[in-house]
Length: 476
Image (cartoon, rainbow, N blue to C red):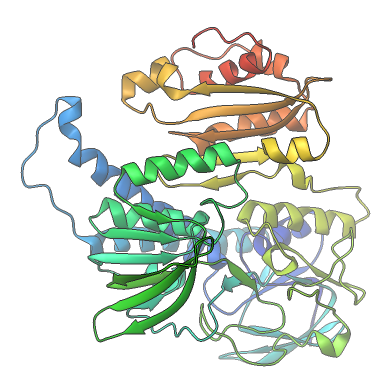
């Protein structure tokens, strides 16, 4: 029986990064994966969706090329080729993970892992086997959450897993859930001509985002032609062979409305793969398929694996990271946890700073956030200074025709320390890193404000927002 110092179950951005770090620290490492290397992120989520979004953005630009003095005739698209491009991106990066495993001398084991003891794993698949491991790291990720009683038929009603592979643009689509994933698919479908309706229970789309940013995002997405219903609950659905009719309820008035759509996308969040392993990327086996209960690994009330500060579960030498231990369910959060978990196994004093993990939405305009929202800061008792700067006053934004949005910086009035940063607009998901670095260094708004930013760049909006927090805005 093969023996390893560490075995990682799941090769997503948490699992494979953890495996590499463990190998760098001298461990003999194995990684178990039942499907393609890279997990949901590389194969079904982050990467292919960004390829779809880029194609949608390009098509939108072409349809408005006259604004740039460029004429064209006969513009068209082949959405099957758009999907093919996204699959190629996933395939390339999945193969890259395979290469990294070999480069770092990590043993890759194909199959589904089940814990049959605190230090023993059974692997089922084409070639079933058993291995022993001094430590085990669970990085099994998450799958789309579904609505009880609503059948995912993969033809009319889908989750993001099916939608990412669907090669046709529906004439109309109803998206249940206006969070990050829902907003991104809404942008793709709307760009390619679908009539899009977003149905969100919360009072704002992108729940968790700063209220001002969410309000601006809703306004701009509506401007693009989307129908957005906030404070609205899904009640029921009736299908025929080619379409569905949804009944939704306004949570304030109680008024019911019917929405007809050729496609329904259920985008209400994700569920940890902890007490049930998926038979596909959307559906579950019943029972404890990972074998957690047999060895004393406990779950919380939401089905997430309980861990301590070392990411150890309630069973010694069994650890867990990423989506399986709960939100935020983000690839980069899982990667950080993977590195820290392995380093703490080796006695290092590493730590994940959860208040500095950015959240990003890749529709257009992009949305990015880090740290506290204005409301959260005030609720926590801070006296805050707010700096806000619009893209329409940024030279580069005007030059390239991307004037929607703003940068908002929240700082502590007493110390000047940056408590949060929120951006909506072109390049937001790239620019948020500057505010993240500032938070890591415990910088103040003044230190961003006096940092020279090249002109003309979009990042000048970050500098101007910092100046605004100081009452020194120059260009607006």
